[in-house]
Amino acid sequence: MPTVTSPAASARAVEIIGVPLDLGASRRGVDMGPSAMRLSSLVRQLERLGCAVRDTGNVPVPDRAALPAVPGAFLQAITAVCADLARRTAAAVHAGITPLVLGGDHSLAAGSVAGTATALHERGQRLGLIWLDAHADLNTPDTSLSGNVHGMPVAHLLGLGDPRLASLSHATPAVRPEHLVYVGLRDLDDAEKACIRQLGIRAFTMRDIDERGLRAVMDDAVTIATTGTGGVHLSCDADWVDPQEAPGVGTPVRGGATLREAHLAMEIIHDAGALLAMDLVEINPILDAGNATAELAAELIASAFGRHIL
Image 1 (cartoon, rainbow, N blue to C red):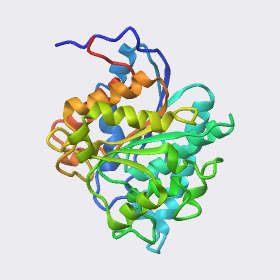
Image 2 (cartoon, rainbow, N blue to C red; image 1 turned 45 degrees about the horizontal axis):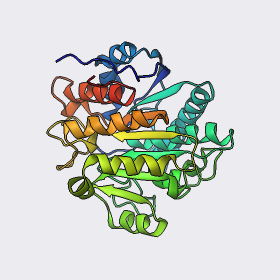
Image 3 (cartoon, rainbow, N blue to C red; image 1 turned 60 degrees about the vertical axis):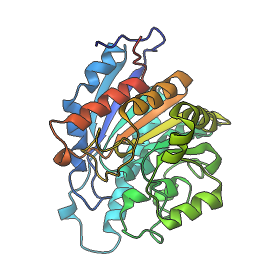
């Protein structure tokens, strides 16, 4: 059945920024995520919504084989990539453009969100962050069991962990705990659970969605992220959707959001009218079939930007 654009869908300028980053993960392949997304129907769907889409290419990312085999080399390289990305997202938001960041592993969000926070900070405002993910990504280099930096971006946005990666935003920290909300968690380390409790972060797990329904959870999430802030950055890991629907992701975990729940979450975020920037990360074409996961991601992005059934 064809999708009809809602009359409420607002035209906007969108800047696509690719980040072919896989240095934060141990499994290879997510560096091809931006290419997979560009091969999908993403641009066509956004243009059908009236968006003026400009693709500014990829943030340069060093090849892991070219990095020195010394401790901290990957973290240093990721910090440089995130600093570049933060400048780009800040400039876009300053200009009234919505940055759409395509990953790449989720460590890039330490830069993309930092940039959006900088743009709001210079207006005297704080940033709200909605994190759709199976994982909390709240480890630090000291607490991480794997050492993978894609499990650390939220900690750095909260001002924890490595000082270089935690200080990319002009706002300090980039995001305050009371303005952060998780939706869809189902795979956390013990240190992350303790940090969520200690900081009082609002975290909705899949159990919350099962018990209360996605609508109630997302209404609460939007309220949390918009209260006392100048807008919302949405950071979406494709693995928040169940792997039966989205198999081509970096770290799949069974029991995620259904296809319809994922679309509803995006539609509710759009209807709130507070979306300033968005990440869509962790697409791994090596694990995909016929680019189906990237195509699903394109459809979800379209829902976040205003595509409705009627």
